[in-house]
Image (tube, helix red, strand yellow):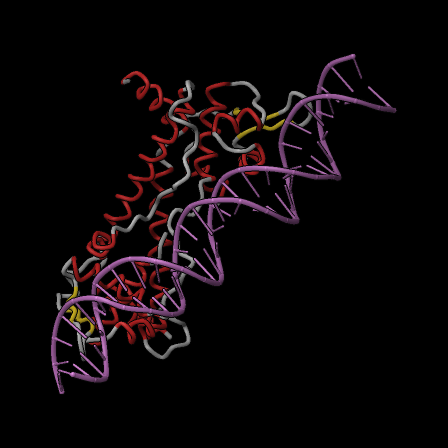
Length: 141
Length: 141
DNA sequence: ACAAACTGAAACCATATTGATTACAGATAA
DNA sequence: TTATCTGTAATCAATATGGTTTCAGTTTGT
């Protein structure tokens, strides 16, 4: 899958920790990617209302919502994340054989269902949960 | 994800329907791919004991097990399918920031869990189920 | 014994996907 | 009004994925 999801979650967690307005450049350096990609991802989170943005001098991104209310399914929705999919299709709709003509449809249904299951799981994890986990992990070491 | 899984499931369903020994060439034409790829995938299913193979003249692949006992998790195991993953990692383990150093680990755990959830679901679907579904779908049209 | 027809496996090529880079218009604050 | 940001698009590079070709090894029929 595309790693936009990871960029978004990382960005949200970082914004939540810093509490201030952060530029795409600073975010990119923390995420270890380039500012343009950060802006592309964060723009979608903005459209979904998950963050505030400010253009111009001293602008950037700002996390305003309650981190325990922002779950990862909301992030998936904002980015239209697809966890499980395959562009390649087996068989061919026009073949007379029941298997050859029907398998790709069956596989698509399977992928769709797996996707929905993944999204449901993501609904149970919040930005706060991840923040807590990071803190716990640091203490362990 | 890679579409080896689709090739394998399609292959098993086709073998189950035909009941006879089928060459990689015939399988490939039904799956709509090339014989080499079919052989690569089917060899793994053979190693997992899901099918029998026969080399030499009149050789090929043969489905012997009870189709209602062969579930898709067994196929996943045979092929070492990974449904959800991302090769790209955000942040960097060596950075002092808790978020930057810890996020990739957290995301990996999330992907691993999603994978396990997908595999569990796959355990509930058998080759027989798919065969039945194909028959039903054909009747509907 | 030998030829034909198959699998198993690897090397290599073509294409698609993914992330990086660059550039620039528009917004905003000092 | 200038400097510094975001938003967006175009292009480039690296990686992943599937296709093709090839050949050694196996098995069967004659």
